[in-house]
Image 1 (tube, rainbow, N blue to C red):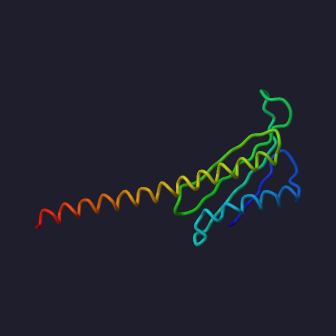
Image 2 (image 1 turned 90 degrees about the vertical axis):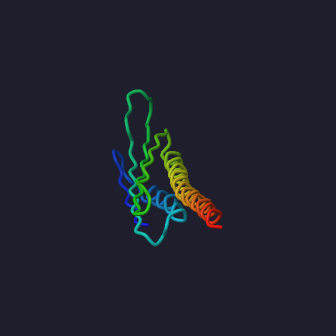
Image 3 (image 1 turned 45 degrees about the vertical axis):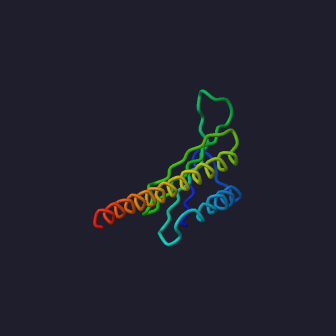
Amino acid sequence: MNIKIRSKNFDLTPAIEEYVTKKISTLEKFLDANNALMCEVEIGKSTNHHKSGDIFKAEVNITQPDIKQVFVVAEEADLYTAIDIVRDEAERAIVSRKNKRFRLLRKGGAAMKSILKRINIKSK
């Protein structure tokens, strides 16, 4: 998986970069490794005037040819918490899309089986 990390409004330290890479690379087991994966991570410190203190924002954008684009955003008071939440949400989105694809495949197979059974009964 090709991971690009960008920071916005604060300095990206090697420790944060390593933490993001470690967390996001675990998503690779849910994706097809044969296709080219592109993962863009943007970490930033936003100053929302409605919230007090530092608010950290983490965005993950995963692009793979056979699934739709996965885009997840999390805003938290702690940077590491935002990264953890964004990773969990991305995992949920990937797994649900993967399950939906297989569910539709099974449903189509069951429909085809019932059609073939009806044809077989009518031909006898």
